[in-house]
Image (spheres, rainbow, N blue to C red):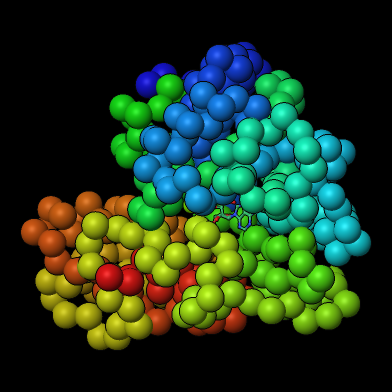
Amino acid sequence: MKVIKNSLEGIREAAEILTNNGVVAFPTETVYGLGANAFSEEAVTKLYKIKDRPSFNPLIIHVSSYDMANMYGVFNSSANKLAEKYWPGPLTIIVKKKKSKIVESATAGLETIALRCPRNITASKLIRELDKPLAGPSANKSGKLTCTTPKDVYAKLKNKIDALLDGGNAELGLESTVVDCSVEKPRILRLGNITLDELNRRLDHEMSSALPLQKQIKSPGQLLKHYSPDAELLLNQNGPKKGDIFLSFGPHPKEIDGLTLTETKNLVEAAKNLFTFLHVLDRLSHAKGGVPIKVAPIPTNGVGAAINDRLLRAAKK
Ligand code: TXA
Ligand code: MG
């Protein structure tokens, strides 16, 4: 695998690899994505294989503008409202699919399509250079810990992908919020940095939420067990003891192995650090012969809801 520098030339090189049906890890403001040309059956097939992703789980299609998104999906009034407010940005909007050159396997044969216009400049330039929609699931093996840094992508995928476009660490650290606008009443399928409260304020009515323990799973990827480290995760833990591995919220207790998501109890900072620190502690757990990772209680307000959602799934056995 080639590591490509984030420069105009680097972006051109990455786009060239994508044009030739290669798979390239690329930065976005949320997490790293694994990119493939959405018009290429060969590239998309390769992508599913690399991720070990079941073929029924559709991919997010990344675009560089609203106009580009409009070529592939039918934007009704709620989809338009959300796109206008949050694009480019960490929101994925599901709408009815238009007939296009996007291969069926990328959308798992559904009648809907998930579209996202990232605000990360490198991602945006890459899509413009490719001049085609970019299929981009998160850069990790299906069900495993998400990667938010080039270092983690390298460690997990170096032998499997063609290139990594190094755009530094992800700004937000959690996958995009996913809203299904293909139904009459839009509903949230995945929590993220844009919160449910914020979305409800934008739309005329309350959205329903696919909460973590809800039985009915609409989004095929919203399986209960997901984002899993190798180590066992124990949630809502207080008072760690010597020998434990602890992921804290607020000042880290003295003489306890581990890290704090945020010294100052800042939830946005905690979200940004969550997956990076889980990678670090997963390695520590491995080095200590499989000691579980204990995680402090995290408040559920604001982006805390999304953090708790990820942790619940990551801890699921
Ligand atoms: O922040 C993100 O969204 C990142 C970056 C790379 O953009 N991408 C990402 O992709 O998280 P992925 O594949 O890990 O998650 C996409 C989610 C999955 O849960 C998938 O099932 C759901 O979106 N999805 C995609 N198309 C869908 C559709 N038509 N209907 C319902 N859910 C859909
Ligand atoms: Mg994912």
